[in-house]
Each structure stands twice: as C-alpha cells, then as structure tokens.
Amino acid sequence: MRMKLMEILKLVVVVAAMVTMRAAEAIWLELPTSGETKCVYEYLRNNIVVLGHYVVIHDNEHYQADVLPTISVQVTSQSGNNFHREENVTYGKFAFTTAETGHHLACFRMNSHVLGNKSVSVALEWKTGIDAKDWDSIAKKEKIEGLELELTKLRGLVQAVCENLVYLKVREWKMRRVSERTNAAMARFSIMSLSICILAASLQIWYLKRFFRKKKII
Image (cartoon, rainbow, N blue to C red; front, side, top):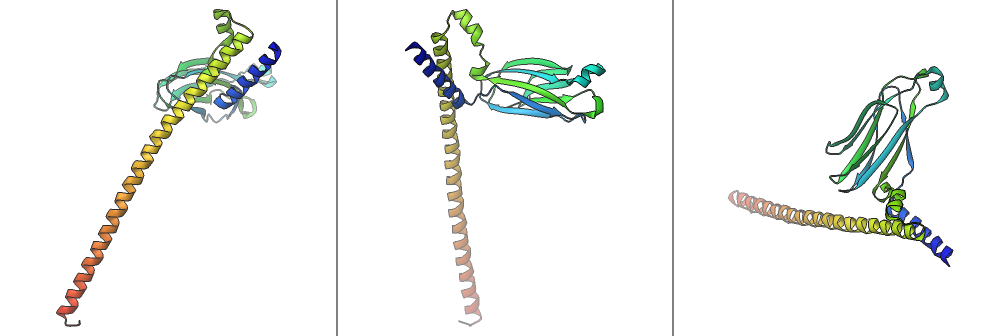
C-alpha cells in the first residue's frame, strides 16, 4: 500500500511539473568566432528565484593546443537591470530574484579565437521557481525524507501552479479591460465617423439644391 501511494505521488509530482512548465534541462548554444552575441530569455513574474550555471564545452583539440576559448556573460532584465556579468571565463554561476515582471536575458559572446575558427558550444542550465529550490538541503534542514519529502515537493508544485493560475487570471482581466476599452473607443470613433459622413452628405445635398435653384435648373 505504501509503495502504491509513493508511485501515485511521484506520478502527480511529474504531472504538476509538466503543468508548471519549469524545464531544467540544459540549453546548448553555438557561439561563432565572429564575436556575435547570442541570448536566451524567459518571461518571468516578479519575485521569482532564478539559478543558472553555464560552462564552455571544450574538445580534444583545445586541450592538446592548450588554448581554451573564453566567453563573456551578461544576465539582465528587459529594463536593463544587471544581475550577473563576467568576462573571459569558461564557466560560472548566477542567482537572483526577479524584481519586475518581464523578459530576463542571459547573453553570451566568445572572446578568444579557437583553432580552425570553429564555433564553441556553451551549456546553460536555467532553473526558475520551484525548480530552483535545493530539495536536498531542505530535507536535511527539516529532517524529512521519503513520503514526507515527496509531499513537500508536491505542496510546492501545487502552490506554484496556483500562483501561476492567479497570475494568468489577473493578466486575463487586465487584457479584457484593455480590449473592452479599445472596443468602446472604436465604437465611439465609428459613430463619430458615420455622423460626420451623414452631415457632410447632407450639407452637400443642401448646397447642390441651393446651387441648382439659383441657376433655375430645378
């Protein structure tokens, strides 16, 4: 019975993780030798914890030539707040809590040239929200394990889902208000345009009648 309950909880945790769309898989980037900057970004709400780890992938030619390519890294928000900046590195970590809602970017650029002008691969692990929690440390600190740990993870995932649903509901309400205001403005503009057209047509008819009567045409 205990094993079945554990399996059910694990299945629920997996489903909840898929719902929250918090993928923690590494992102691979190919940086050209031309020095072109490549960025990855994610739209995040306010007060979201973000953890990142990046590393340059070296091949055998780099080690044999004792020339390891380095990169420059910068992590910013869409308003320009700088959370992390490093120059001439081969690996690093960053952590921050978002202070605004919007896109948050991690940009990479290769500094040094490599043999044969080959591009360099960079692996980036980007964790946000519930995925950024260190469950091992939490388990040790609160002295929980097994079923209790799985329940704690599940509670965290459910809380993240609820927060996302509330955020989406508020955002939908704001967008609906904007849409309603836009529709009302368009309706007023249409009525005003129609009124002007009717008035212009009436004035034109009145002018033509007056002109023809003066000319004794009608």
